[in-house]
Length: 294
Image (cartoon, rainbow, N blue to C red; front, side, top):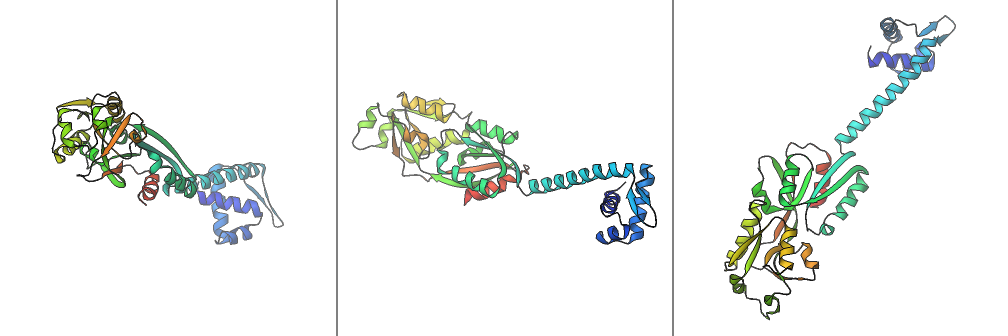
């Protein structure tokens, strides 16, 4: 039994005229009759009563006409759904955003555009630390991680693709309760006697090395280094006056009343990147990343 045989049967059942049915399908009447006969033989049922005056469905033919009509409609719907999924017209997109990032500066507008152009794409969003986002990308828990570019050092770059979509300047953050906050002119050399709070290299080697580079470029070495397991944890330690840290202007620390931010000038802006696995073929990924980099 083939789809074409079923289509021949349905066409004949709708018109109750083999000549008209054959014309609608752009085939010869003999081909239509032959395919219906083969279908009847395979099913071992008679589908039509044929006389010189009329053609009508048998009871079995009436039942099969109703059921086969449903099946073909379902098949057409499934095919359309599959094609739409391939084009990204429907499906799911799972995003991971680095904790403490002010996503309102880059995410809502792009998600709104995605909803307008592809309203059937469902989006889910989580937040996480550097390590949580890396692991989620690699085990396919999320499709895309939005993180800082220096964390690429902890990825296997042969497994991933990434695109830069946002830039933010680095800054030194200190507690407003620190004596450093009241200095009229901030001299970086004063940080040589201070404790630096850095992301643990176990959490992100890239983040740890990056903060050391900031100190080197500003010609000072901190007296002590205290590790934090996340940016949020580092911010809590800064609030408590346990030391200073380095964050970026797009971090929520800018809105923290207990923290003072001092811009760095001897370094390049930080880059936010979208990262995903090369073998992740989710068609919604390019739809979203194309909007993001615009």
